[in-house]
Amino acid sequence: MNDKLNSPFNTQTEDFLIGSALIDEKTASDVLASLKEEEFFDGKNKNIFRAMEKINNRKEKIDHSSVAEELSRMGVLNEIGGEEYLINLMESAPSYIASESYIESTKEKALGRRLLDVTKEISDKAKSNEMPLKELMEFALTKINAVVAKRKATSFVDVGSVADEVLDAIEDIRKNDNNLTGIDTGFTKLNEITNGFQKGELVILAARPSLGKSTLALNIATHVCKTMDKAVAFFSLEMGNPQLVMRILSSVSAVPLNDIKKGKLTDDDMASIYFAKNQISKYKLNLYDDSFTDIQDIRLSCQKLQRDAKLDLLIIDYMQLITADGKSRYEQVSKISRMLKVLARELDIPVIALSQLSRDIEKRDKESRSPMLADLRESGSIEQDADIVMFLHKKTAPKTDDETVKRLNSRTELLILKNRQGPTGEVPLIFKGQTCSFSQYEG
Image (tube, rainbow, N blue to C red; front, side):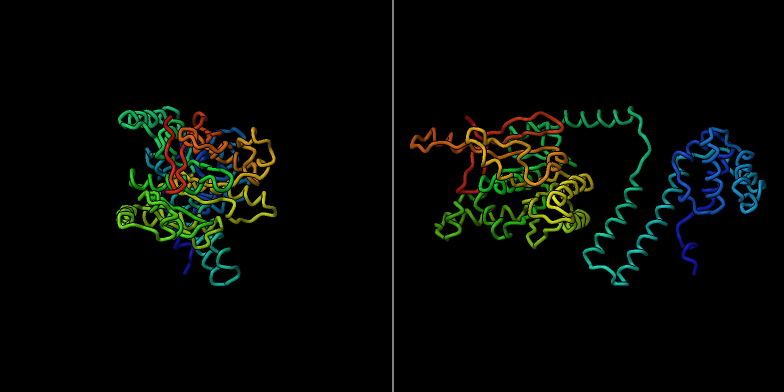
């Protein structure tokens, strides 16, 4: 059986396009601007299209005579059926065609054929066992995404049509009581600065160890699930799922984590924990801790989750524990950073990636230890790829018995040092370590 003849094609659509292009200059311009030679199925139409391109490159008029001459120079005029074939195409062309729909149809058929070729290539490699499963999955993903990327490719869009979409979005924002265009973080001041975390954004949350990165990320995740009924994927590459859930239960129930760990719980504590358990069981919160340390594993898992259910927010704790190909750690982290940004765009969701800071910050004087963008560990590309970069920072303060001063000393600053779509600023927070939670400082 001829596989080529079983591929998707519609030669009549191609004939109508080529015939109309030989008659009408606008159609010829549309065809040349929107299609490529390989997107035609019929060999004769491929040759005619190539001839039209050569004529167009010389800025000469395209008609059946000029195309016939060019085909003759190419040595394929007789092969396609001579000038008579060109005339037949013109005579059979409709008096009017919507070239956009015919072009779209031709592109769709070409993509269908390309997809068949790619799936056969993947199938052949799988049968031959010539590469490990993980490499095969990455190969398959790259090939399929290349086809999808071609499908997504569009021509230029006029500014007026984009303005219409923007105005519709503005009207929706006006009707929205909280005026947020993105995901509600649970912190009023952070929402004011970011307008919520937006689809397609890569958000970096960085800090030195033990300042509460994971806690803040979990707080945001549970808030998004509880108040917005959104679906969140949380990749924990450092803590296991039981540890994560224990922290969530402590935060939601307000029972100290240390008491939960030791089992020193009253009946009231247990009632609070069971109530918290019933609450969080309703959350669309998906936890992953099964050694998903490869960036491709994360990508595949998220794509599957979005296909099977829904995904509104991805959180990764933390990015320096992810592995990727690269000769140096700098190259690896650069690739991870770039792929996380690509993943945010692909899935059309915000991605929050936690990050460690360089130890160089500890070498500075205590007065100058406020974090800077240059402190992001192992790669300057993190700063480049990120849409938002936030740092948790706690100033060193003397010990005191004064309750007011102690409260001030417990304050942690969330510093937004990069915000591609808005202002930078500071969000004062109170870290409640006993119950694994942050609240906004009001003072």
